[in-house]
Image 1 (tube, rainbow over the protein chains, first blue to last red):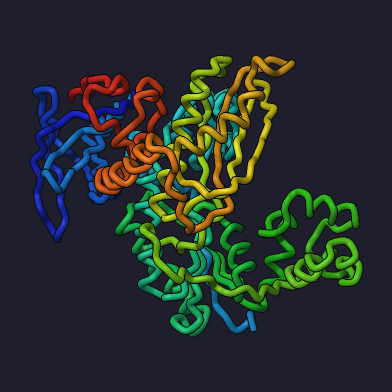
Image 2: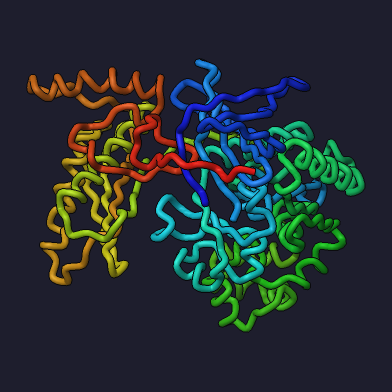
Length: 82
Length: 428
């Protein structure tokens, strides 16, 4: 099941080799452990550059959006296997 | 001469689908098709390697693709993601040579003559690029590569082994490469040229080589010379490196036109709905022109009906314009009489399109009337908003209920959007 969302989420990250790695995400009162950062890409919204992290746990794919201007994370896409 | 050069052609395999499979591990190993915004009324823009094996082809309607492959997963395309990945792989190529030609969104030519020295060096560069692609983009985004003395042969070589192939055609190998290829494998021989060659009794590159040049010129004019040279593995075209870098690393040539079209959610006879979509398209076209400091002197409108018949009309203006409302008014005056109620066959409308051409940097003259002046003076403020926050930051009140489907990379900015259904991910 594939859904487009726009939900603010809490994300715990680690920094390594000048890169950001989301580790856990809290959404709908539930914590999801991120196993894999599969792809990171950026896009422009007007003059602002935002970053998208395509990450997954064992059952779900999440696309997280980081707005570096206001340091806000949002869950913008969800794909659940099966 | 072309034979002195060493060219690498790199073609990303099933690019959009591979990017999605890299991003989303649950799509890997499955037949997927990247589609437009409205999956039911869209076409396959890219099929994954697994889907291609099951018979799904690019440009097939999603309905037909699903019919051929019921297990096919339709996935909406995300242009921002592909542009970002494209920018990154072309940046990797630039680390190896400054002579990089971006041939298309997923294909590039690299002239590595000086950097490689010989074909062994070129092979090393190609393998190193492959390793960098794997490290920096991920192992599911793969490329086929061809190395040859010119662009035409490098592309033919690269496309001879897919996916993830590396084919080397040294100058002494190009005839053998051509002779094991089909005529239509060569970039520049499409179905029509192929048919005309076939009518001359030419079915293979060997036959094309042996056909008299005069005969080819008689049939194809100057293109006959190109065909004759191509059959001998010759191509003198140069690498066209971007002279000016665009935001996505693509060369910025002068645009010839700006246009948008939209397939409606349902075929409709509703004139008001069609009018609103056309106004929305006019605003998008006008904004892009103003952003790039252009005005247009020609407006072309396009309507496709439910039976897939189309009508196109165009009008040349006395004064160039980059105002959305003006574009719409001209476009609507052209298509109004083409609406279903005015047509004998009464087909509903499936798609509306609008494009602006004959571009100029001349500014539109200040309107004479006060009301129009007021509207005109608002545009710079609205443009400043769009520059700062992106397109879609404002809309006309008359379009408030007209919903243009968004792609996945452009999720609605408000959490209250009707498309944003809250849901719960599968918990472990």
